[in-house]
Amino acid sequence: MVNNLISTYNFNTWAWLSIVFSIGFVVLFLVYYFSVATLKKRIFFSISLVSLILCICSVIFAFQQYKIQQNNQAGIIFQEEVSVQNEPNARADEAFQLHEGTKVKIIEDFSGYLKIELADGTQGWIKENALKKL
Image (cartoon, rainbow, N blue to C red):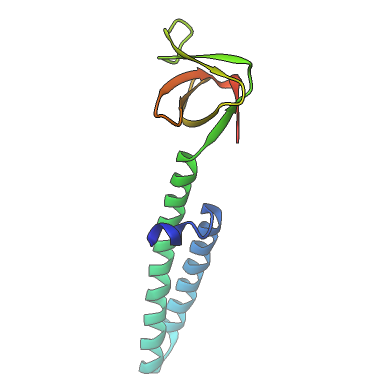
């Protein structure tokens, strides 16, 4: 249920919502601080606390959505044939071969190499120019 809520907006929208809620908190707290009537003080204080909680939740949701989007980055192999290596260097052993059009999941980026994972869970390193990110 929480993941469905987080997925309703992208991380940029969650960040903007947190800014709106933080400004709302500041304004409502100032109204609370300068109001004289106790009933108004209670109402504005309660609403400002709700706004603060919503601000904190939206910041957390923004970070979670950013993490989800970074972990789900995919790419397509665009070279005719690519050798996938065990390590991210030119002298590493070849693990297997991939062909043009193969869809891969990008796990990590290191010094001109990308760590990829296939649908069956096989992992390896390829040169960054061998694929295009989606």
